[in-house]
Amino acid sequence: MKILRLIPLMFLTACSTTPKLTLRPQQPPSAADNAAVRYPDTVRSYHFGRYIDPNDDLVMHEQHVVYRVEENTRWNLHSGQTDNVVFQFTPPRDGAFSAAPANDAIVAEMNAQKLATARIMAQAKDLVSALAQFQTALQQTRTNFQETEALRASVIEMKKRLDTLETTRNQPLPSLSFPTNEPPDSFEP
Image (cartoon, rainbow, N blue to C red):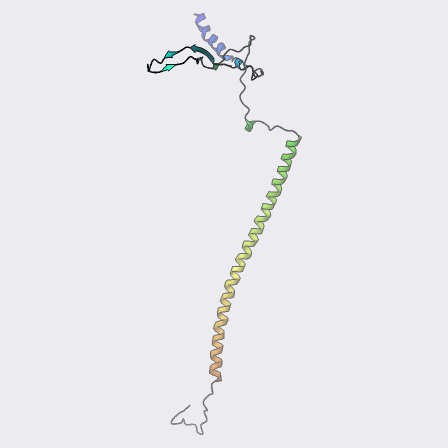
């Protein structure tokens, strides 16, 4: 009964280790040694003498050579090395979670970019404040323009009134000379 209890522990220990694969850099095969990567075509030549075409007995073929591909190219799956190669899988590095590579040129460029960004931000603040001042001045100009238009309209109205008063003042007034205090019978201007 105690042996049955030990069996699950054996499975747990078997699952706890993962095989490590290590990659060894290998030299790629040269272009001349293409057979190490891919097998070439196998082509055979056959010599035929004169013969009559089997599909048409009115056609005769003269002697010639026929080339036939016996075997197409295929990948060479043999490693070619006799020693045991152990591969280790390393996942690709995620740039979001690792520090950027640093050398003097990169650090200098990053500092230059930070300085340029700070200058641009300062200029943007200056531009925003200048734009706010411009908006205030524009609003003040609009208000002044409306007030000027209202004043101009009132000046024009006053001028019309003054002109009408001056025209009525320039007209001769009727003479009102009465010898007595009694009103005249007929009044003629």
